[in-house]
Length: 207
Image (cartoon, rainbow, N blue to C red; front, side, top):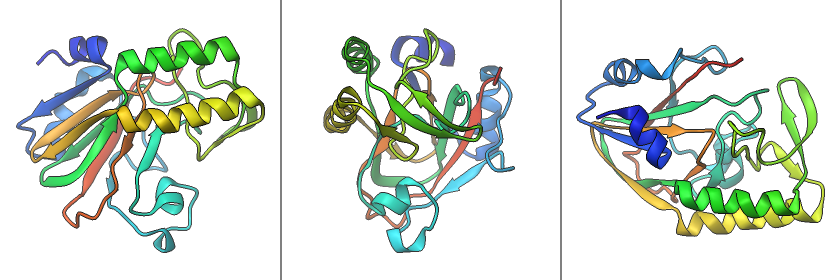
C-alpha cells in the first residue's frame, strides 16, 4: 500500500498484517521522525474508568464512554502531523474517523462563523481557532480548548454531532491505523471490551 497516497485521498490509511509494534514503526518510517510524548515514543492505550484517572484526558472525562472527535496533541505548539495506532488483537470497540469530506465541510462552516477558543498548550494559554493555517486544516480538542464566543460554542456542538455520523473503523487484529492529524479528527466508541489495547506513536516534523 502507498500510505502517502491513501492519506492524501482519505486522511487516513489502514494497514493490514502488521504483526508487532516494531513492524508498525518500520512500516511508517516514510512519514517522518518519531515524536515522543512525555518522554515515551510508544504509548499503551488501555480503557480506564473515570475514577482510575486523574489527568486532564478523555478517560478522566468520559471513562469507558464515547470519546468525542478531536486532534491529538492539540496542547503542543504545533500538533503532531501523523498519529499511528496499532493493535494485535480483535476489539469490538471501534475507532471513529470523520471523513475528509465531512471534515472539510465542518471547517468551511467554521471559517464563515469565526469560532474562538482559549487553548491550553505547553507554551501557555493562547487564543485559537479550530484550525491553524492552510496546512493544519483542523485543530480541536475539547480537553484543552474552551470556547469564548457563540461561534465557538456552536462549533463545539457541531463537532460533537459530527461524531455520530463519523466512519467506524474496527480492529480486526494485526492492524495499524495511520491518521493525518492535520486534516481529520478521530474519536472512539464506548468501550466495554476487556481485550482493547492499542499502541500509539506520533510521526512528523515539528518546525
